Image (cartoon, rainbow over all chains, first blue to last red; front, side):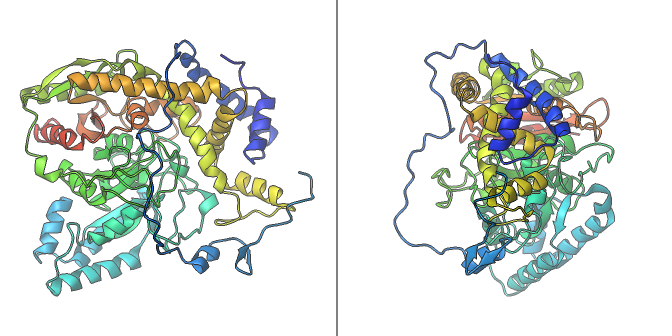
Amino acid sequence: MTDPISRDDVTHVARLACLSLTDQELEAFTGQLANILSHASDLEALDLTGVEPTSHPLPLVNVLRPDVPGEPVDRDEVLAAAPSVEDHQFRVPPALGGNT
Amino acid sequence: MSALELAAAIRSGERSAVDVLEEHLAVIDAREDEIHAFNLVMVEQARREAVDIDAHLAAGEELGPLAGVPVALKDNMCTRGVPTTCSSKILEGWKPPYDATVVQRLTAAGAVIIGKTNMDEFAMGGSTENSAFGPTRNPLDTSRVPGGSSGGSAAAVAAGFAPLSLGSDTGGSIRQPAALCGLVGVKPTYGRVSRYGLVAFASSLDQIGPFAATVADAALLLEVISGHDPLDSTSIAEPAPGLLSVLDQGVEGLRIGILDELSGHGVEGISPDVLARLDAAVEALTAAGATVERASVPATVYGLSAYYVIAPAEASSNLSRYDGVRFGPRTDGATTNEMMVATRTEGFGDEVKRRIMLGTYALSAGYYDAYYGKSQKVRTLILKDFAKAYEKFDLLISPTAPTTAFPLGAKTEDPMQMYLQDVCTIPSNLAGHPAMSVPFGVGDDGLPVGVQILAPAMGEATMFRAAAVLEKSGGAQ
C-alpha cells in the first residue's frame, strides 16, 4: 500500500488540523496511527476494480423543501454562547501577523 | 417497574409524575457518586416538568405515551439553555440555542428529561473512559466499564436512575454498552430518527436510538422518536414504524441467518462464553419456529478497517467547527490562527485528536485513494453482500460485543484493542441498517452477554419480533 506514516507526516497533518503537539505526543501518536493504519492494510489485497464508492447509505439527492421562511434561532441567544462578541458580531484576534 | 407500567400507572392516577421522579432522584442520590452516569442531573427543570404533567393529568387532559416517565439523554443531544458538552472541554459551559428534534418529540410525548449522561468525548470510544469529566462505571460491577460511547446512558438505566435513555450509535455506541450493562439497545435504520440537534461525529453513520430494560420499553421509546423530520435532510420520509403492536407475533416461519463472519469464524477476540450464548439464542429462536442456518456476508470482515478510515475522515471535517470563534471556551492567541490552534489543542482529548489526525491523513493528497476511496468501495461491497444474504434470510444474528464488560484501564493503552470492541456492530452502521442488542444470559464471569439481531433497512418490526421471542424464552435470565 503506502509507506508507514512518519513523524513528518504527523507533524504535517497536525498543522492541517490546527493542533499543536509536544515532541512526546508526536512520538506516541505516530506509533499509534501507524498501528491503526497497518490494520487497514487488509484492504490492500482487495480487488475493487469497477466497484462504485458509497458515501452514504441512503439513495437521497437534493432534498428540497418549500421556500417558506421558518422560525430562526434567536440571534442574542446564539451570540451569548460566543467567547467574544462586539456589535452583534463574533470577535476574533487579528487574522494577520504573529508566527503563523 | 417498566416504563410502560410506569406510564400506565401515571395515566391512571395510581402514581404521580412527581412521586415517580422523586423516587428516581433518590436512587441517583444514593449511587451516582459511585457510578458517574450523568454530566448533569436536571433536578429543578425535571421537577417543574413533573409538576406540569400532574397538573395536566388532574385537568383531565390527554397526554402522550411517555407522560411522567423520566428519560436520560446522552450529552451530545442539544437541550435549549441546558449545557451540552459531548464530555469535551471544548464545549464546556455551552448552552445550545435550540432543542434537538428528539428532545422536542420526548417533551411532546410527556417525558420528563432527567439529565444529560456521560460519554466518550464526541462519542469516540468503547468504554466511556475518554470523557473529559472522568469515567462512568458499570452498575453491575463498578470495577468494570459500562461500554461506550453511550456508557452514561446505559449505566443510568442499569442503575435504575431512569427507566429509559437515549444514546447515539456510530459504530456500536448503543448496542455494545447495552450488551455490557444487560440492556436492550437499538440502532435504528439510518434516517429513521432525526439527527437535528445531535452533535455530529460521522454524519453518514450516526443514528440516535433507545436504551431500555425490556424490548417493549425500547419499542415504545423508538416509536416516540422516529419519523420524518424536515430539519434533517437525511431523514426518511416515512412515519414511525408500529413496533409495540407486533411484539407478540413471534418468529414462526422466519428465516434467520447466523452471521458467519461475525460469529467466531475468523473474528479477532470473540470469547467462547459469548459464542455459547449465541448458540443458546439460536436454540430459542428455532424452538419458536424460526429456521436458523449459517449465513455469509463476506465483506463484513473488512468493516472494521473501512470504518476506522471513514468515521475519522468524517469526524475530522465535522470537528473543524470547534475553533473558539462561535461557541465554547477560547484559549487566547495573538492571531486568529494561533487562537484556534491553542483552543483546539487545549480543548480536545487524546482520542479525539488521534481520530482528527487519522481522518485528516486519510483525506489528504496522496493518501485519499489508498484509504478513503478504498473504504468507500468496501462500503459498497458490504451493502451488496448484505443484500444478497437478505434474499435468503429475514434477519441475521451475531454476538453484540466480543466479551463481557472489561475492567477500567484494560484497553486504554492500545487504541486498536478498544476499536476491536466494535467489530460486530460496525457493519450495520456502514450499511445504514437497523440492529439491536438483546441481553441473553451471562458469561463465565457472571456479567451480561448481548445477542445482536440485524435486519435490512426499514426492518425494525421484524427485528423487534425476534427480540421479543428471545426475551420471552427465558434465556435472558
